[in-house]
Length: 268
Image (tube, rainbow, N blue to C red; front, side, top):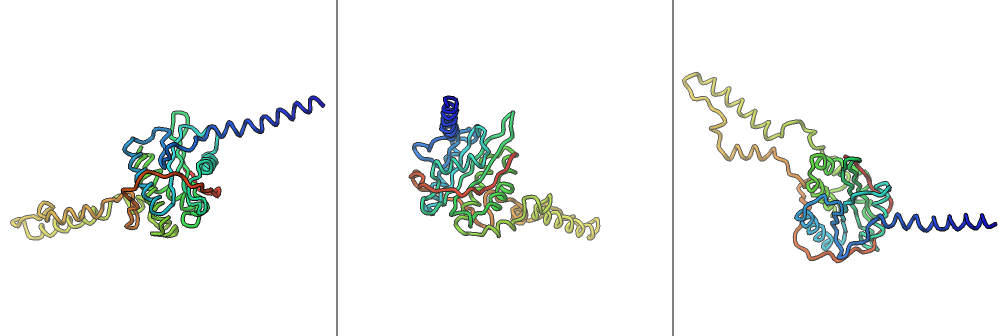
């Protein structure tokens, strides 16, 4: 009987201590409250400030809260489980709307690869379903992260997430977006420029050796600039929506939102 009581005491202690220990791994809600919390030191101070300003402005205008958190370790958690627990603990999003979204990142180290997840509250699952979270990770975040451009990936991803949450385009429309590089190795403007040079060179030769050969140096500068500009990329925007924002005051705090268990993950 004594052994049974001892075992029950041990199990009771474990039942209470283990969740407490895991809960300590997940950071407490920041004071003062912030939407961008770089606990792993992956961003510069200016980059944190730029993202914070944009997300605070978005929160002020829509009440939707997008939080970015980096952590040096997951403490044995699966990254999506960690993100769900952190989102619930902090209460990201509004209580009645559950319109919070969390981007959680664990950086690459000498011993482990980098991991990222996007998890959304119940209220955003229609506008930003799991498949779309996965597409944003694959299209916007991981290509930049693999080049060491952490801020660039987060800037592009948050712009897309904000536009989706606003309804500027649908998840289905975003899913039809061509993947970067799918159109080939050369931007269309460069291809057009090369074709024009070839045509002009052939035309010049057809005039005979006494005529002046027409080359790229004789093209008007406005034409050269417009052709080159037509092939340039526009990082951080899609479908004509920049998703950016400026202004806004300090972040007022999280609203007690809940998460539905969905989302997506990636690694690099």
